[in-house]
Image (cartoon, rainbow, N blue to C red; front, side):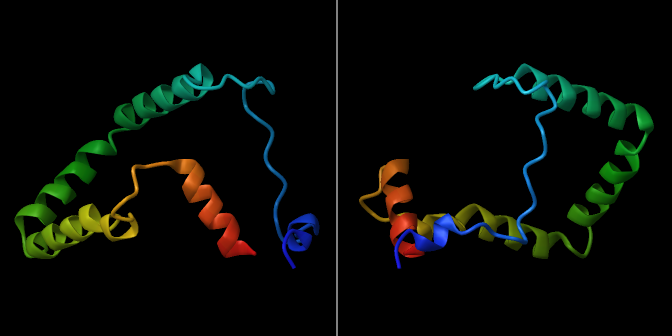
Length: 104
């Protein structure tokens, strides 16, 4: 087995979309992505959709759903803790090696 499954093309996998910055790899600190995000955030706020969503969220947090939302928040915050090994210091290379072994 091993790497044979990796060399076969996946017919259901969609090809990657072309980058929106003309194909340039900007690396860390991608200014094009940052600009698109900021422009989108401004358009969203200017659309007026933020206020009703904020009001819905306030009602949910203060209303009948409050306890359920707090419990879900705590579960989400604690969710990754059991995935870390006690001796794990966040070494991503080790994590990649584990994933490779799991795939084989």
